[in-house]
Length: 600
Image (cartoon, rainbow, N blue to C red; front, side, top):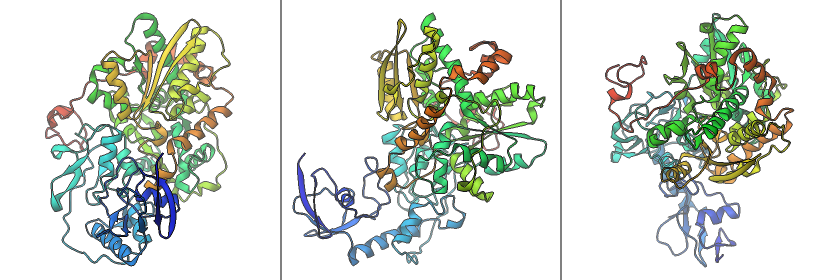
């Protein structure tokens, strides 16, 4: 690797010639401020916060895009640089809604932090501001152009990482804003609601559609029996909302906090993850043995499901018909749980705590109900749960470890790894291997499907059968594999697709971290470690060995993929038009007051 020698703030350093000045400075602990910069995703020098002075250059240069050169002499902290950075930041602030106390990112805002670091006391450039309309019509994502600083990070991640490109710069001059094409709402755009745009937004121009007040109302309603379930990835990230290191597992404290919030019962979506493996595993075997559509593709990620419906509708028949785990759980709670506890299902209110913003829209889908009852009534993100705990003045870090409530809080180690890319595949293979061989196999850790490579392929030898599998995460990476399938160039039995890079651990509803932290720490790896750690600690590590799951089938469901299971736990999907008319979007039949269709 060819290197060059340069001097930054009187420190001589040797770095690869492909480096930028920003990278070189960070190598020696010099923290040049940035705002629009996202390593390998958004490197455009637009915000001008990273300006530096290069000896011999006429003007200050943006360090995030300026390459290093042999003998270069650079200053990163002179009066000229400080004044230029402040002026640029004040210009950004002049057209920004600065109602910080009422902002969802107050205390965790990169713009706010940078203003503090640069000692901004006042904003001199107070010109006329245009109040723009907030787009809050979707069930998942709210877009507030009044907070947008036009950094382009959301545009880049949607286009370059997710390969969707729903967001773009529209209009010109003072009217410029980041929005879907054709003036569409986020509700009508072909967005998969993965929330990666929220995760990279440095302010609160993009945020989840909050259901916190709706859940508080349900808890206060004495006529409601309020049940809460938590997804596996939540326990790997919730602690970050309370200052704990990234990847700290807080399962017990999370349960205790939920009980203090007033929920009647606290259950684990992991129970339904085990249930999903039973249904999905037997569905896979049925397809392999009876000539069904292959490869079968997992259906746990609602962002991926929407992506398939919009962009790869020809592969809809390849999708597993299983609902996602939290929807399965809701259906079981409003049927079996209601029955054994003699509760009218209409009085049961199910809340899901999810790492995912797309789950909000998923729970609102017309397919996600049984006998007129919604499977899930409200979805909160990990961030929203953190806000509720703080609002209730619960000292999270001082809580004793609690335990999930009976039966529906029982789960295997296979279930908890659902939150990491490759986890669903590994959990499925653990069960399918036992079913095919008729044995209780001791080898259950399939490391070949673990890790953060975009595509992981494996041939798993199970008895006399060789099962060809693939794991892919992030819709951008998924598109490359899906194209191969369409062209007949990929031969698999089973494929796991997660809508977000790394899986649910980096879902759109997880705690937000700054661009600098994202560069220093791989969230996908650190949060996944917590899940594999819990898996290793569990006494039962295969879904079909969960005794409560066995009892559920014996007493209520009958058999996997049976009539009752299909009625409650399975669904169907259909092609979606990328840019339908407003009338086509819902055909005037929806009952939502939030729909933007003229018919409604």
